[in-house]
Image (cartoon, rainbow, N blue to C red):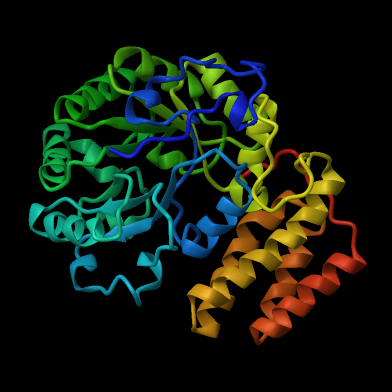
Length: 374
């Protein structure tokens, strides 16, 4: 099993500092994860270029788990790893996790076998997606309606891989949360061999709206013997640390805020006392003020575009994916809508690159600490 770098003084740590877990670590340490902060799987976003962007902002000596986009096990066996954009990986990328969408062993088995050839750290099973087309196949959050069947999906995945298997699920399948059912459901997954769980504590009907109920994460974590990670509503480094320190989560999984703050892991590390900057960064201080974040966002956009050009030869694909990235993350910045609108007008990557540079030179683009999703 892959391990993580032990973060001691030699890796840039001070002492335990502001750490919510100290030297002993959370229960993710049993899986070799010393720094239990990670980037969530996000459809249309967590491709190899975005994962490389996150890596470029991760302090030297720290490895964090990142996830692929949601991958259909019905399509995956017939797709090519080298040419299917959603399946591409970077050289030396060993702490990534493919997220599988499926519920049949005949498709899960060949999907896992194919993905093992690119050396993933583990596999994640999607039991949280609320999008209607996934529900038609009894995928995603629909699997939460049958705990016995969901447990078999875990067993099938474990059968074909010795690597850690996690499940990402919601706080409830329908319109509301039920702690009693969630405890029964997660117990079934634990008994089936799941190595760890991620709870997005909103029911299906809530999607991404409103406030995530982190207390639900605490209750599940207390009940389970395996690690339980929290996801949802993590917009700042302080949010991520609070999930561990105040809600007993074994880790924090950051989603859309990472598209606005690709350096959020750096901010978390600095908050916990780790002083080593990312490789190639001359400054040991990460962006922190709204003005600093605004300037860094422009640089991050240009960096992402550069990674996209490396991994995706199709210009239209690059433009489409970048616009979606901007539509997701630019809302954390003043004039964010104007920035996104600017990206929709570019017809080529060169034109988009020049427009981003020009936008950054003309406008102050300070960040908002938090945004509200409707």
